[in-house]
Image 1 (cartoon, one colour):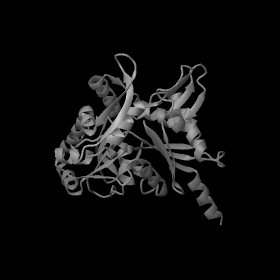
Image 2 (cartoon, rainbow, N blue to C red):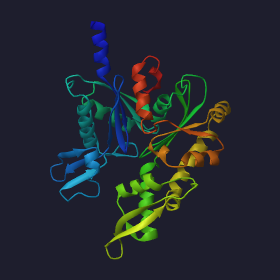
Image 3 (tube, rainbow, N blue to C red):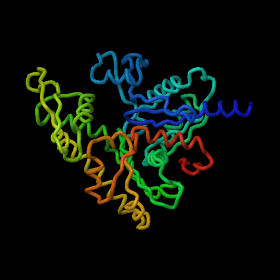
Image 4 (spheres, rainbow, N blue to C red):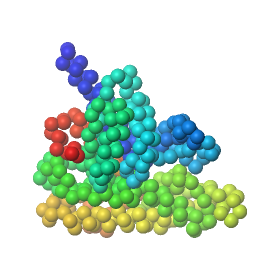
Amino acid sequence: MFKKLFSLLKLNKQLAMDLGTANTLLATPKEGIVLNQPSVVALDAKTNQVLAVGKEAKEFLGRTPQKITAIRPLKDGVIADFEVTKAMIIYFLREVMTGLRLMKPDLVIGVPAGITQVEKKAVIEAGLQSGAKNVRLIEEPMAAAIGAGMPTHEPIGNMVVDIGGGTTEVAVISLNAVAYAESVRVAGDEMNEAIQRYVQEEFQILIGENMAEEIKIKVGSAFPLLKSISTRVMGKYILDGTPKSIEITDAHVREAIEEPVNVILASVRRALEKTPPELVGDIVEKGILLAGGGALLRGLDQRISKAIGVKVKIDSDPLTTVVRGAEQTLLDEKHYQQVFIN
């Protein structure tokens, strides 16, 4: 009975975190995913007091009075504002550790493959100061490969393209190690900004960050669709400041996001060029895995497949692939010991 109780307490004290630019996810080996919230914090502009975190704070973006500031404390997949990130992590940990606040959790955090030593230290310190007992890091593409059930422990080449909010991670994995990895700081947020610029230049209409993301989700595509789709968009007309409604189609969005999509394609090409021939053969045979929120962009798998000449598959739940992989490492720590970043 004591053994069972100890095992249960240990599971409750273990947390996996995908600390993303756009969203933060938390999972436990016992319950699976327990939190999925936008990585946004609303602050009192004078006192810096936290007023809202997550979904509520995201609604404030672009809509706050001068006395309230809504910010994203992470940029390009890493910490841009240490204190606000720490406050956000503390809030999220308290949300999922209800009734167990005296128990300091062991925390595994997914981070970009191209993270620097300084950035690693900042993530670890934020986790420790937020109340974690131990903090270990795992590269996001490695976590994504594990989460998607790829045979990472075998001598086989597995290629992962993880497109988040701030970064696109491209990696080739074999024998529980990264054979090649590249992190480009172009992903979903860059696409949103490209849509904002396009609407301003083409239609002389100003739209906010949330509206640009909504357009991308509703009608965005990276490959021509069999049937065109469109949506009505309300924005502010630059010339006189009045509200104006326009129709945006999938073709408009494809044109708007062409540059960031090409950057992602170039990173995939580079990865294949720098990967040993034996592993490339495995990738051609098995295909490329797409994960992260960016994988949900219509036709992106077709666009990559046509450009690279390799089949591309999308994970069953790309938004949670990384946190599911990090959670899996907690279930069998000995087996996955070498996947953690030193």
